[in-house]
Length: 202
Image (tube, rainbow, N blue to C red; front, side):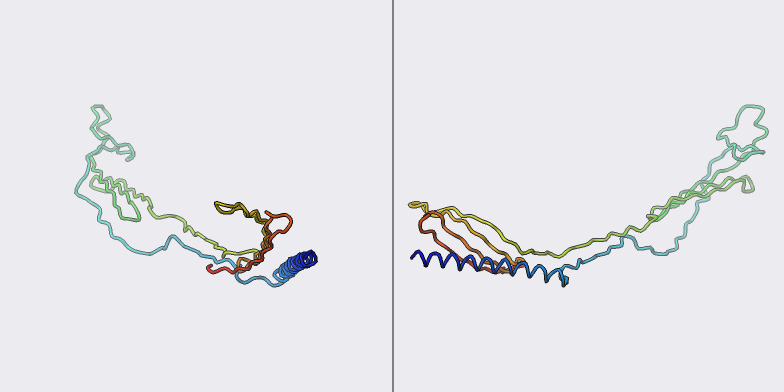
């Protein structure tokens, strides 16, 4: 009986040693030939699409504001006629202001008129972005590595607490595994168990 127990232990030891050697050789082969499944998937998303379009704006010419402008410098403007001697140097003029808008731009117009056009300005404010933002997403596929796992179990039933186990499991890149477990509850005659399993779902 003792000879049979020693031969069983040697057999299990040889199986574990063969798995270790196989794992080392498999790692060397995987380094020599790159795995095509580990190539990342690159997704590029461009947020802005530029489109050329022409919009026509109608400037309002009915509403105006009466102001008083210096004859020498049209940038000097009074909303009310001053009651000073300098009032003789002022001209009565009209200011036309308008704001033109769409989804892309705001345009501000200013015209100072006294029979003739004395001053005119136009300014704008862009609502569209000035640069195109590109988002690059790199997705790596799931990879599984081979490796050894040490595990233990403890349990029993209501009548008897008879399972204190220690085991070793080898997992081959998440595809299949082989395990060895010994029940240590009885030191004189421990129970030996071998297991094999495969992955059912990715």
